[in-house]
Structure formats: structure tokens, C-alpha cells
Length: 309
Image (cartoon, rainbow, N blue to C red):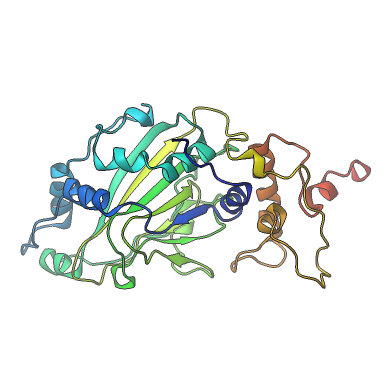
């Protein structure tokens, strides 16, 4: 069966916001299999350090060690939970649309946040992960894809992953970024079992504090493209030309288009410097479409006007 590719509107949402979210799309049997393969942490014991508890959990998990650079298709044993997850049509279609049909495995990790009982027993402090960006050293025009998989229900009390939509194209120092914990428009993963986040590798994110009575599990896979990330999605959905529409002084409702999505601000945008993100989005759309002349709402055209040279 042919995997369904993303539409142009889906791609525009990814370019503008840095993520696509699919709630409850992984079947329960795969979720249950993954949790069984990941294993459970031992009950907290007085004086037992958290690093030891976490290390033993990772060592006992039936998730393979995989070196970077191997084809993603051969990274996981056939029939394993992650292999079955990657074979889902929705997942295959999204991966192909974003990084091509033969991506390269970069790394994976089993992220587990522990409830207060573990920190009380270990004598440690239960704090949230600092806000960070995974791609500070990455200057490329394209991107890696990161999939975050939530195999069980995540409640607000569990401190699910927080991320700030639209931050992926603003490269910063991770150390400086770590000072920020709450940013306008940030989202927290509260979701049902089997939810997936497809993320641009540059999005700002961090893990929250788990105040519940059970561990919270998230599995992350990062992959690199092995082919140019140009026109990989459903090209039949791409209009022949950009939508021309009025800006600022607008009196009538506008239909949703690639341009309207690319030009939608996030709550954290400042009125003036937020326009830098419009330019960044247009540049990424040019890269993905292979069209160096593409523009939305005249932003690049006015900047590249030869009469101003």
C-alpha cells in the first residue's frame, strides 16, 4: 500500500511552526509492545541514586544500540515495536515527505521522567529539563526530523514535553536559552496513548517535572535526509502560483493557503522582529520547493528589489 504523503498545507504548517502532531495514531498493541520492550524501573530504594536507576532501566530495555549513519530501514529488528511503528502508513508518508524515502538513522533515546518518590528516596531534586535547542551547531538550510513517540497517556500532572512552536528557525546559544522556562504560546504534551510529534530539529523544547505517581515515557528518534529535501510531498496539492492577497488592511476573510499559514505569527513574535521569522519561513519554503523566486506577501520581493541595490 502506498503511504499517504503530506499535503502542501501540512508542509506549510511544518515550515511555519516546526512540528506536526498526530494524536492517538499508533495502535494499542504496538504501544503495549513498546512499553514491554522498554521495561519498568525498579521501585525506588533509599539512597539509590537516580543515575543508577535510570542506567539500569536503559541497560535492561529491549531497544537496540544503533550506530549513527546506518539506514533507518535497518536500524530496528523486524517485528519490534519501533519497526512496526515506522511501518505505519501515516508514519512512512510523513517521513518520506519531510526527509525522503531512505533516511539515515542519527540517534534515539528513551526519555523517562520519574515521579517524586524516586527523588525522595535518592535525596535528589526533582526539576524540569532546561529549555534547549538540539541544533545550535547546525547551519544547514535543510533539517533533520525528530519523532517523539508517547506510548501511554500523558496527563498534565506528568509534566509532558513542552515546546515552543515557531522557534525552529531562530538559532541561539543553548546555554542562553536555558534561562527561559515559560514563553508565550508554548505547548505541553497532554495526550492519549500512541501520539506522535514530528519535529524540526531546531525547535525549542524541554521536559517537564513529573508530579504523578508513575514514570512518564517518551521515545525519540532523529533521522537525517539522504536525498535533497525538495518536492518530496504530494505535489498535486501545490498551487501553480502563490496566492496574492492584501496585507495589513484586510476587510474580508481570507481562505487558508500556503501563504496564509506561512504568514501566521506565533504569540511570542514581536511586532517588528517577528517579521524575521516570515523571511526565514519563505527561505525554507524556497529550499523545499526548489523555487528560488518564491515569495509570500511580497516580503522577499521588496528585500531583493534590484532598484534598491
